[in-house]
Image 1 (spheres, rainbow, N blue to C red):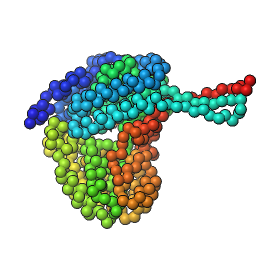
Image 2: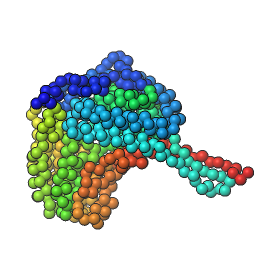
Image 3: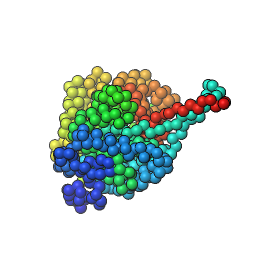
Image 4: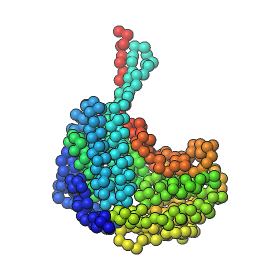
Length: 498
Ligand code: ADP
């Protein structure tokens, strides 16, 4: 009861540390209003209440941040990796110490339950710890040269000022996956978070500041004019690299913009993840796996199981058991401890999901449950199962980004593989089977950057996250996650026999 009343308080009064709620942008180690003092509203998607008014910046302040980042980086990259690592370790510790407040801020602006937000904060922090350690292991090579009077070596150096643009579905983790490796190797970052969820980004910056990160190395540009801010980030010659997580169309646009000054890019873009359930699968594993892969964050993740392909022999039992599991869901605000799932981010998102489901039904899919907008304040769409879905329907080709499970049927392994690969996307894919041989064969045949075999919770700081085809390029996390922020320099020593 107390919890319910507590959560109707203004956001700032829900926090133990009120200094974590920031509404100004963070540039050059200082908090800034917009030049014209304009602000934009941040809204709780579960209640539609305004929870903050955040500085609405444009191109001019973005350019200022880039300039300050460039200056700050020069000293930062000259330091030993160990010193940078110590600051990152402190940042990690402060995030870990403030999980509860950070989770409340995230749930308030994004809608996910507190359980999910706490999980994301821990996951987000794990990237900082990981890269604090990995940043000390940036090794070069000594290359046996083709001519015996020469010696060749390579060293790896920070690429320079990094621009980062991040989405609203993981308001904290999508930031640390980029910022931590960049800072660890000696880069500075100018980051534009999604306008829907700027508060988590600003709270991270506040904690970085408290951790002693020198001014100018992390800059948070808040604003709704993504075209103006993105235009400056992609055209400014001081920026050497753009890292982006978001939709494929915007990723392509930003790559084109970066081409003019040949900036390095790394892209985490859309997905259309297949999840294959073979006849020999263990449904006790499959059902909880799908609840995670399909319904976490109410289906708003780029690795959500977007197409569930089920072999004919197990189809009937699978649908019955999935429906039973979904019946236990309770959509609601984070303020209620009863909520198992949160809202979608905006009304537009709800309308998009509704339109996709309605079209699929018109095209011949069967609605097993859900299929409607929930009649209550906030942006809620009911958990939905569609069966008899086929590759002839438009929903086969679309990223649903909502709590909608679409079930396809197949007969042979080859059919499943062909269906799974019939998409321009290639981020994550999952398969359930008890056969070791089939696991290998199918995993090798799937054109995806990440494959979960009898597992859907595949992401962690220690393994590479990223896609192939139109799902992007580059890898985040793991030992490979540093590569996107490093240049390889070859140094040739000549006349060695003199
Ligand atoms: P979504 O549909 O999930 O919001 P987007 O690709 O539109 O995905 O957004 C991801 C991020 O890209 C957000 O921070 C958004 O503000 C930003 N963004 C959107 N359009 C542009 C653009 N033209 N230039 C730069 N950034 C953009």
